[in-house]
Image (cartoon, rainbow, N blue to C red; front, side, top):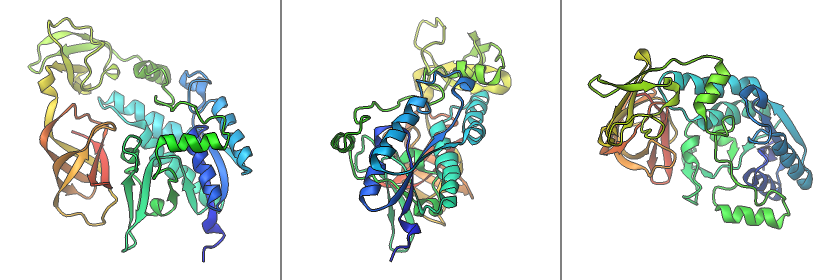
Length: 361
């Protein structure tokens, strides 16, 4: 018999169609739901128009309207301090150190499944519910598994690799077995006015995609120009500050080399950006830190798995060597293009997420 607490759920509502349908499904399944939107940053502080991000006033009103239609209480929680510390500051620090971060992973880790998770506990909610496309299953031995969504085109398991056993036990993804068309159909049937609302594609606090511009505004710092060089150290030109570049980049370099050149490495200590040919971007091996194993407590010292090093990449076969408590070394069977420091490496066994961590080299 479930306790009353077991049937209480905190729904993270962004104002989009996915979280709205997640809230509807939880209510349909008999849960006592509370809808919440996390206020993550002051738009003006980030130099962002109030109408151009998932934290806009319009989105709050969209979420509030859906909650009202569903007859569930709705709140806005101010997590701006946590978001600045755990997401925006980390984003800036990564670029300053020549890495390319994925802030959505940090937001899931530190905001949705940490700050919001603790707020849910305070409110007596047993579950935190989001509109992510992923699935959670419990094995016969009691261990919780994170699995890919049923719809591979919408699968978001890559950005959820940091979930712990405790968090998985208290998280629900109602959309995990659905595709986007089904989600929009439900929203349409329920007369949700956001049924056709487009998905957010950009980083919420950099909706124009100008990361370097955001970092300069956010820090108030100037990032000095430096040398573009080849791998042998020959100077090819001047860059406009290392925060403006990422491994694999070809456009916007301003270099007339007579052939396509790409960013192959960023060297913050020397304020240098190394350029090379496309083939210079291919590597088989990488090191990963802050690795979170989901599928088992004690991983074997070496095992085979499929791995992906970018959100949209199809996972590839690799040999994984556990090198420390939270570190692994991955050797791909075939070289992969533009393995980038700061991005996530996530391991899979079929549909099951073995775990993931941050690429450091």
